[in-house]
Image (cartoon, rainbow, N blue to C red; front, side, top):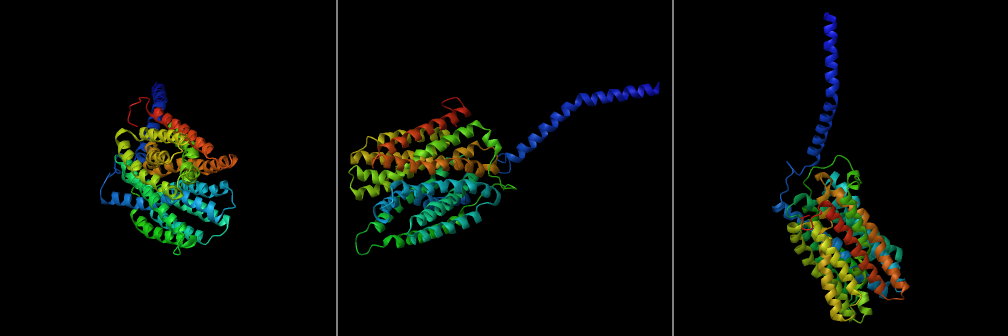
Length: 450
């Protein structure tokens, strides 16, 4: 009888364990998910964003210096391209020259993409030092170049890749220090490239196209620029630093991101946008000369475009923190596309100047928010650099293909630029619609702050 009772007790205990086993398994899974959430969502507790303070604003200052040098010099490519076409490499077709600038922008986005995982693992200091050194080296080597392939390797590949690493460190470090004020902080950082876009074209035009006996020539013009870059990158290396915990391994791709339709749609939108986005930067000078604008004024158009974009990077950044970064990104991108299509009808000098100013303002917002939007979609503080990098990987292909396609269209039309303008505008508008779709996938309410 005792044995029977014992067996019955044993059987009942087994049954209870069997009934509770699924519940225990569910509890374990829930606990594991909770632990991963606590480890991943570092925003909540120990990693509250300062959103200000001396160190945070020094990061912004250092980032602005890095942007002034890297992206700012790339924004002056239109002046260099015109000089190559007219003076240094006159026998090369326009599409060949475009490949140098195109690969420079491609390299910037690709270098930015490669840098993000390295930043998440090692921080900013050594990446900034190495990339700054190689960036200055690329300019010095370009000053000694005489053949097309040498310009391509120095200005297209090395300057582009190292400039992209400076870009990523500046954006990711700023994301580490700001959340509520992230839009305006990144806008100030990006304004550094606009300031560079004002100064570099004017300086290059005066040094390269100076017909007096005091002309410096191509080599010394680039060497002077290299020394200026060196002076500005020294404080950038000291000021730009991260603050969030580092990852314990290097990861170049995140499976969670590619499963997120909001992220994927945004990334594809950036790719399509980049197919057309930089064509105005490349061709506004030389296309304006063809339309009858005085060559002296035409060389200042790029500086004007970048000058207006200072306001386009800071003011929309303020609005983005108030009304939503994706909302402002969509409006800015869509407006840039419409303005580029209107560029088709701009033939008078005043119309071209008006387009230059309007496009400069709208495009400035796109550049300043391109790093803020993927950071907003990232649920893990230690993967912000990776999320920004993945968008840059995809966008780099658009930067690589877009300007040469524009150059090929110009060649196919025997020097006419209307086809390249049309291609540019259509691509930017199409990309903006996907960015808007990504915003609606987050919240279908049209007035939601996203």
